[in-house]
Amino acid sequence: MKQNGAGGAVDRKLSTASSKFYISYSLVPFEVRESLRKPVESGISAGAASKLRESTPRRGLLPQYCNVPVMSMPLRTDPGSLNPDPPNPGQIELLADRPALVARAADWVAEQIAAAVAARGRCSLVLSGGSTPKPLYEALGRRSLPLDQLHLFFGDERYVAPDDPQSNYRMVREAWLDPAQFPPENVHAMVTEAMVTEAMDPAQAAQIYEAELRRVLAPASGDLAPASGELAQPDLPQLDLPQFDIVLLGMGDDGHTASLFPHTPALAVTDAWVTVGDKNGEPRLTLTLPLLNRARSVIFLVSGASKQPALAQVFSPDAQGSDYPARLIQPQGQLLWLMDLDAGKNFR
Image 1: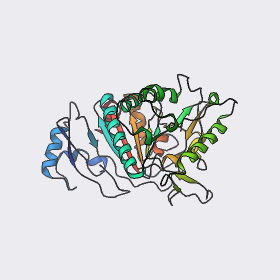
Image 2: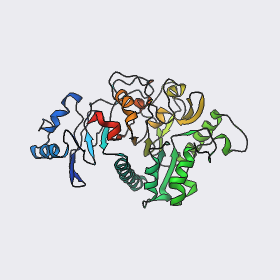
Image 3: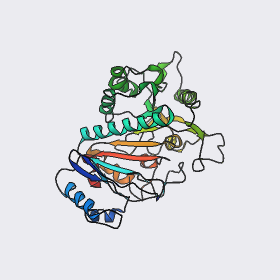
Image 4: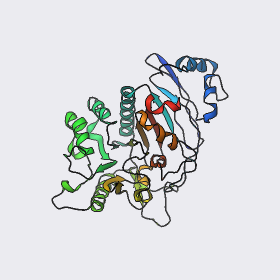
């Protein structure tokens, strides 16, 4: 399903996956979700609705791919606000389990890379850390991808050495970069203290990474452009934002994403591309909300039952962005949530 802006047209199609059908609908309110098992006044044929009923039983296993209609909300006009009212949920897909989630994510990322290269000659991909995306990176490493035209960036990083077991860079290197023999000049890791000969504080490291982003992205036509009217800040006339093609994000049990944690100063940063996140006094580097929200495509990968409470708040019309920062991700482009059934069972 593709939504073209707030209230825009939505592509409706009937597709097959593992001999099962799924169907993409326009976003609809929660209260009519059950009615989607019957023909409804949304341009869906009775035949398509019948196939939907066959493929989405009330109990038992879901199809491998299941697009879940959720509350329709317009795009937020103030990406710096900590209380988007209301948030845009984008598209949600439920997958049967984590392997199915990884397979779907790998297909989607590969398609987006190919589309970006075809349109602009290269692709900028922002990677996330944590355990959920590791098998995705391993799967991408087994694919034939245009590595010379693919540039990798990091959404956040722990302030540790690059060979530390907690380093996002190390995880990505072991899962994807080394096995695929990724061109090192196309990998743009965040600078941490142990990456330089002279110790520096995290704020300096954030400035260095922003300089690297400007160096790599500014020369590319279409990657760097003045902020649109939605992102422009009257007190920040020089804030130009690059537009990443793909941003991969996860979500913690507390609703944080990247290293944007609840009730931390990083949530309010609008005059920089990179800032210092804070997890219980532990510094981390992170991309800022305005930069993440400039992306052409954002995909969340969410797995595990422990994520259910936070997901309920992220999609609630009443929750606060400062409490659940993943709620603040409202990109100009496409927003896709991939959840396994353990995480997204309440969205069935």
